[in-house]
Amino acid sequence: MTKDEHFEWLLWLADDALILAQRLSEWCGHAPVLEEDIALSNIALDLIGQSRAFYAHAGQLEGLGRDEDQLAFFRTDRDFRNLLLVEQPNGDFGDTIARQFFFDQFALLRFTHLAQQSFDTEVAAIATKALKEVRYHAAHSAEWMIRLGDGTEESHQRIQESVNRLWEYTGECFEPNSFQTAAEKANVLPHAESAHKEWLATITSILSQATLSVPNGTWMQKGGRQGGHSEHLSYILAEMQVLPRTYPDAQW
Amino acid sequence: MVNEAIQAIRKRLLDVMDPELPFLNVMEMGMVREIYTDGEGIVIQITPTYSGCPATDVIADDVLEAAQSIHEQSRIEIIRSPAWTTDWITEEAKKKMERNGIAPPSGQSADKAYLLGKERVIPCPRCKSAETLLVSAFGSTACKAHYQCKHCMEPFDHFKCI
Ligand SMILES: [Zn+2]
Image (tube, rainbow over all chains, first blue to last red; front, top):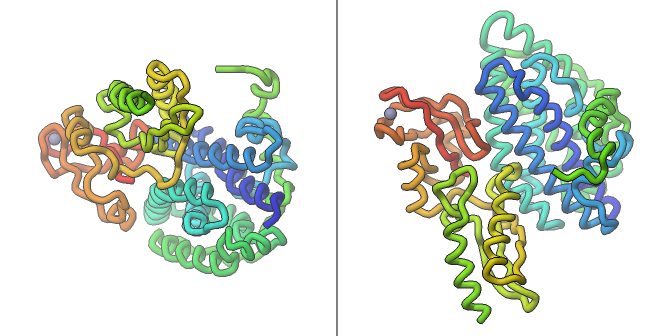
């Protein structure tokens, strides 16, 4: 991989985590029960921690003096490389859980691979730690999928709608694009096609436990990896970046 | 001379507490790896516990301040590999947790039992009953899960195995 590709790879990892964390933190003080308020905020905190480590590493690699804050707060939507999935609005609690469920299962596969690759030992170290955290996240979201799917008539119907609604954003996790090809060649990301199969097998098994059906749609949204985002990202960034952009030298 | 300073720093770090577990110091938590000299000064290696643990920055600042009070030319190095594990918490520290109402991490760090859906038996730190219930895997801080004792009804934190 070239240095540009190496940097790009780190942005994928960091941006996915940061944007999802920003979304999850919107639940702080608003979740349906106290335990979930704490759980979602804790998960957001883990993700922010992961993104900080990736940004700091990316900034050092780039060598232009950009630190984690520069990369998080002073890039525009076109520069962000996150999946469209993670920028989708929180919706109701079911939408948030379904989004998390799809992402956690993807993150498990990705971090397992990242922890084992030897191209970048710093990434392997961050991933080894992140993997331990993501296992807890994945257990949490899977448990909720089953609880909601196999719950009341209303919870079943609503979580199925969430699954159907978000389905078209899952393909992007395994999108075969030119960067993915380069990353596979360098063995720094799991092989898209086989990872997609593995992901689908786990998703299918958990959804079936949840008495939910797997959507059969094959048309998938894409563009996030190339900086083509939905309007949602601009609003997320506006809120997240307003303070450092207004007071660039603010310290607290 | 420098070796003496390193020894003194090691001793001083016994007074640097984890802000989220104020009865435990950073050495007991297993967060301090090597302390060495590289010619420019003394380097203290710290391994973060959780990626997003807000205490990490505070701990690094406190460790630096403690070290610099002994040797001006000291600095912190964050080491992520190998990743921190609850296996590094000393046995004495685990006993202190229990005395302070927190069920300590038990067994091996790879908490596969939980991941496979089988819940571990976490005895109540108050009455030692094994009849406890996992309320939420996410507790008051990133490192803790929330339990309740079915025997004495005490709600308590369990320091998760990672
Ligand atoms: Zn009890």
